[in-house]
Amino acid sequence: MTASRITDHLVGLAGALPDDRSFWMPPQVSTVAQGVDWLFHFILAISVFFFLLIVAVMVVFIIRYRRRGGRAAEPSPSHNMALEVTWTVIPLLLVVAIFGFGFKGYLDMSTPPANAYEILVDAQKWNWSFTYPNGYVDADLHVPVDRPVRLVLSSQDVIHSLYIPSFRIKMDVVPGRYSKAWFEATQPGEYDLFCAEYCGTSHSDMIANVIVHPVGEFETWLEKASNFLETMTPVEAGRKLYQVRGCQQCHSVDGSAKTGPSFLGIFGHEQALADGSSVIADENYIRESILEPQAKVVAGFDPVMPTYQGRLSDPEISAIIEYLKSLDTTTSEE
Ligand code: CUA
Image 1 (tube, rainbow, N blue to C red):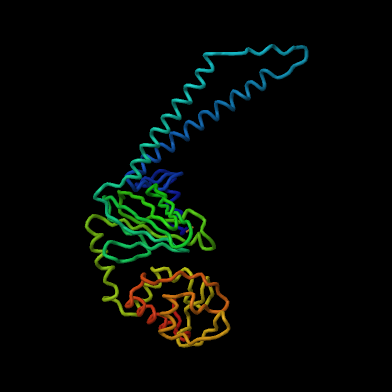
Image 2 (tube, rainbow, N blue to C red; image 1 turned 45 degrees about the vertical axis):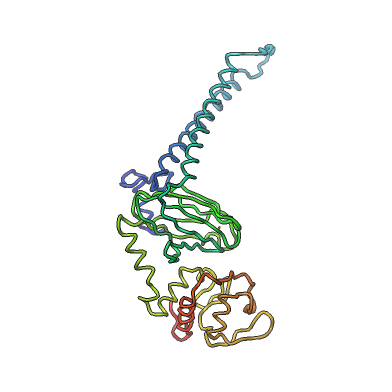
């Protein structure tokens, strides 16, 4: 947390911030956020009320009915109809009300409006990718404000969970099936997206930003972002792909080993492989390692990389190769 965010938070505690952030809750940025918070506070208030009531009565009874010398225990009454009906009916009404509100909220949250904008979400260890209707893929979730967005979620490997606190939505992403979630953002800005299901070593790094674009700006952004192969040099485009397509979660560019080998200074050099042989890391080797990661695994690393077959186009692979070429040990960057 940067200093300015801490200050923001403290100012927020004092109630001086214009947004809906509170001491306990992130800002309310979706159409369902208020209802979710209301039900949460309703249940919390009931719990606090009964906790205090029960503890208070318990303490009074402990003191008042304690065993004292010279007093015999009185026979306890067998039955008190009025009391028993009261403490059955009131909680019954409360849980029925909680169920009613919760069920209605659940139905609303599981039924996206018919005109919702659809974005495909792909989870894998350990990054998110978001595919827009024109085929463009980004590592962050960009959405228009005031428009229902439907997410279709799938996982490449294990169970992940998409969690956007400010929208009050959380949805498990299970391998072998599609999950769905939807929301309508109500305020432009940048918000956090987390993985909320422990999915291995870098689970806590499986984060992304949600960018809610102001009215009219989402389409412009999408158009501009989608043309990056034409508007950027191959090295720049390769760097962008490295950042947004999940490479950087496992491959550093500074020489340090992560889940996979670093990309720094490998191009054109000999790589020792797990089976004892070796290979020169040329264009074809890198292409093969992207499409068939298990074919020639570098010595010292586990064969855990997912294939990018069908997920990266040939021009994209070429751009990534150009980027790797640029990562020479003599001109290291980032
Ligand atoms: Cu993915 Cu935790």
